[in-house]
Amino acid sequence: MAEMILEVKDLRKEFRIHLLGGKLITSLQGVSFNLERGEFLAITGKSGSGKSTLIKCIYRTYLPTEGKIVYYPKNDPPIDLSSCADETVIDLRISAIGYVSQFFYAIPRVTCLELVSQPLLQQGLSREDAVAMAKDMLLQLQIPEELFDAYPSTFSGGEKQRVNIARALVKKVDLLLLDEPTASLDKENRSIVLSSLLKLKQKGVSAIGIFHDFEDLKKFADRVLVLENGRIKSLKVI
Ligand code: ADP
Ligand code: MG
Picture 1 (spheres, rainbow, N blue to C red):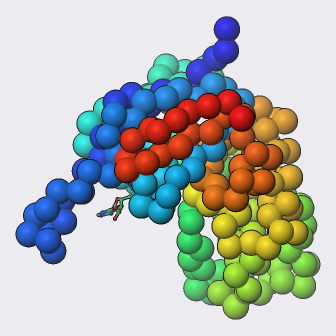
Picture 2 (tube, rainbow, N blue to C red):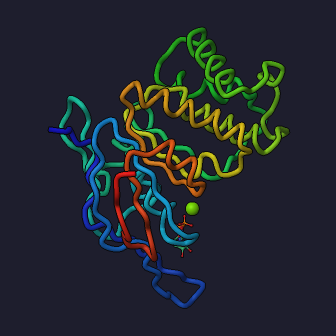
Picture 3 (cartoon, rainbow, N blue to C red):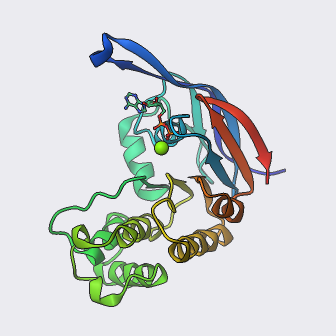
C-alpha cells in the first residue's frame, strides 16, 4: 500500500474584502485530495482559479476557513496544518516543508551565496558545509560563479527565479510546494529547473507544483489536478 504524506479534506477558503464593504470571496471550496509519499502532483487551471491560495493554505501562509490539511511525517504522528500551533509551522518550514513563491523578493544587501546558504545554516549545518552545498546547488541551476557574491536585486528575471529555486531546493525537505517555478523562464532554464526537481524526486521527495506549460507539467507530474473557480474539476494520472 502506498504511504500518504498529505491529506487535504473539504478545504474551503474565503476572503472578506473590507474595501468592498465586507464582500465575501470564496477562493476554494470542497477541495479534497491525497498526496502519496514520493508523488509529484501538478496543479493547473485558469488565472484566479485558486491555485496559489491552495498552496498557501498548505504552507499555512493562509489559514483555511474550513477543512483539514494533514501532514504525515515519516516517523512522527500526523499534524493538521490547518489548526496546529504557529511554532509547529515554523519548525516544519525549517526542517520538512519547502516553498517556492511565484514572486522573487531579494533581501537587500544579502549576496546570492548567502541567500542560498541561509536555509542550511537555519537547519544547523556548519558555515563551511552550508556554503559548499549552496555553491553546488547554484551551479546545478547554472548561476555563474561570478554572480555568487553579487546582490540578486541586480540579476535578470531568469537568474532571480533560479536563485529563488536554489534557495528552496538546497535544503533537505520532505514536501516541496512550488508556485509556478518555471513561469518566468525560457525553455533552456525551464529544463534546468525541471531536471533539478526530478533529481529530488529520485531521492524520495514529494511535491506539489503549479504549472501552465503543458510540456513542463508532463515532465514533472505523476497526476494533474485541475482547479476551476476554486473547485476540483479533475484529478487524473498523466
Ligand atoms: P491563481 O493562483 O489560480 O491565479 P489565486 O489563488 O491567487 O488564483 O486567487 C484565487 C482568488 O482568490 C482570486 O479571486 C483572488 O483575488 C482571491 N484571493 C487570493 N488571495 C487573496 C487575498 N489575500 N485577499 C483577498 N482575495 C484573495
Ligand atoms: Mg497564482
